[in-house]
Length: 255
Length: 337
Image (cartoon, rainbow over all chains, first blue to last red; front, side):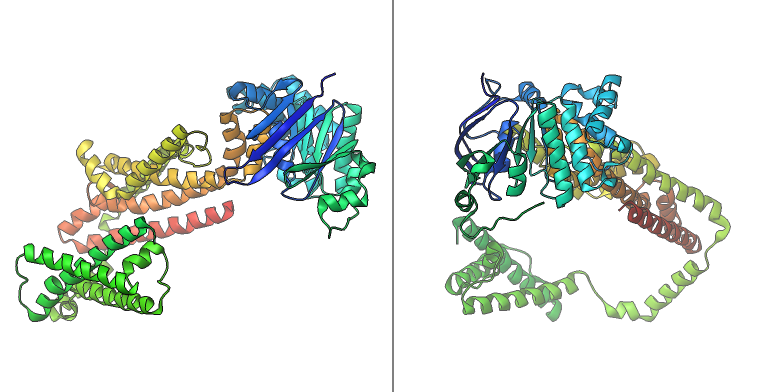
């Protein structure tokens, strides 16, 4: 079976000269819950964005389902993105719009311009939007304005929006970094359920090792843009922890 | 210093020297001695170049020069250079004030002379005893002015809206072609904006004839240019997060603009638009002076006939309406925040 994602000797240098990724290679199989750890600025966010190609890497290749997507453009690029859901640290909802509409925006990649701008979504799309809100337990908020919701609720709307894409992969960039511990677990549990019940592959950037141990099926670690660790959560010993986060680092628990 | 900076500094110093010399020689001295300045000739040019060169030489020797300070964006490092720069700065300021005083023909004697004061008395008395017989006519003209401003805003908003996207740097960062469209459009908008509405009013009063329509067209041009700039700066200011999120769903460019950028901009756009209408009412009044119709045209007519009681009526109405609109627009904009 070919892996869902194959990253081969991937490097990325930003226009301002910052080298965010150096020669990173790994692959991800369907159904995995892969967590990427590393300090801020270690290249985690860049790595995620090269997969759905919000960023075009400067060297190396990204293969998705056996197909090289490294340099896609135009229609092909949009089709590629439409298969991959993404959630963000700051949720990135359209604040002034209703929750239901925010979820429907997940279907933009498969809706042509005029109907979407006129708000002409199909009955099937609306029904699916409600179902996806139900998956994350906030169907009752469908008519609220997005910015009226709490942080945790907004992140769940963002998950529903990603599910609306019927994605084959879910990318989560620090999904709980701006949430309190209790809400963090709630959001992580929804991601876990989507991974286990729907069998969806998840790649998630995380800061807290306690969350990593609880939810990841596999872990990779980046340091200064390089891949320094691949293994199971149990294999992250204190020694590895020091290597990844530096000598002075102390592990903080989130319960 | 880099070559380009040195070149810029030298050109500035040359101009400054020429300005100082010709100001003193052709404006200040003739005014003090009451002798007319000799006709402008080759000698003057030579003297100006010489003075400019002197400043450049001083700049070279001591590092002290206004041109150098401007080109570097900082004062020179050496103490002597700083002192020279500062002294040159003061000298330039004093010469500029003296020259300004003379060329604007400032004359306290005329301001306080018996003749002048009695004229002031006449006009203030007339303004303070307005003729309210013309109130109907005046209000009618004011309505025309307010609607000239209103229609100009209404027509300008959609045009400015569509222009503001290609005039926003973050929207047009895709390719070299896009960046050059952005640059060209921004330059065009800046040039259009630098031309005062009163000039556009003169152009349009010849084009479509004197009247409110000419005034409206003049305001449309200026409003499009300034709103497009304000709108596009707002677009450049939006949060990138939603743009990323909508792009990640596979949305196309128009969809990203419509769903991620526009919702973030609508309220500020509305606020700018109301503010602009407020400004347009003031401008519509002024534009009336050169044939833009409405209360401004009425005002010039009465002023031409020296009917200052009627002018007084118009001044009261204009002041009242402008003040009311100012308060109203400020309140609405505050509520929109």
